[in-house]
Image (cartoon, rainbow, N blue to C red):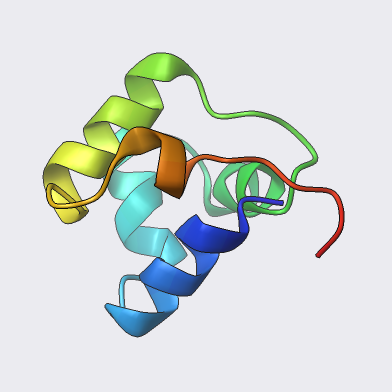
Length: 68
């Protein structure tokens, strides 16, 4: 799971629908990616960071953890 990304999305009130529109994928795909069923591509990670979280490092946002 991308715990930091999930927390920052919630804190910023950014919806999965907004992410799906940005990336051009289905909402279910975004859910799968956030919850670790599939991974974000490097391009997707850069686009999310640039659009919503320019002040955060990619490493912080996209550190993957199976422990949460």
